Image (cartoon, rainbow, N blue to C red; front, side, top):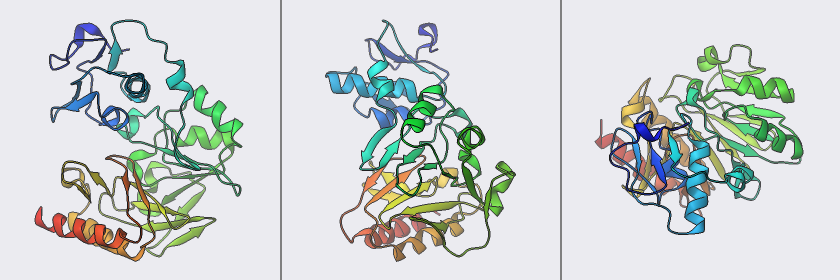
Length: 289
């Protein structure tokens, strides 16, 4: 629970606050951008919710926070926010909330599909999410983008008898994963195309779902302040040059309509424009060597 005694001085006066245990993962800013801002070291409340919709978004941020660093001065009924998770973003694609500290607060996703439901990376293992996943038909496959965002995947795999997928080069984080991807070639599993995209880590992969939804882990995201897609230079653990090459390869997938990252902002893509977005991102990334 967040402690009022530890609240940050940057918070504006009002019910919601962020305390000094914040790790600056950015989850709250993605769920409630009208309420939470950033200092470069942590998030804070720069504007209290003004509408019922903003109140609900702030409550979702509170539930999603991996370090329980968001609190309220007055008791709030969080049931509506809780019941909204997993939150549908587009038909069949949901964001889970309940972000895990072990993945530094990365977003994870639930894909509902007649051939079997998928989890993309892992949220915290919570009774609420388990119950919802059960009601929606369980989980058949858990796709792990890379070693950083495994979190509670093993618990979900055991509960649902699901198959975990990870690349050999990052498999140290999930040594008992049921499917270990080898090599650099694309791997097709049902409606998903697994694309090898090293750079952030040696074994990073992304998932292209039904040729239009791209789940990018920590590889690629939308930068609102720059009004472009790109990658995080300060969070590249293997090779920036290799990551640029992996980004450039994404130009082959011209039908992408949405980018859903683990860290960073989700981004909508204009029809048939994805190769242009990628080219712009590559040009910018080369300038920040």
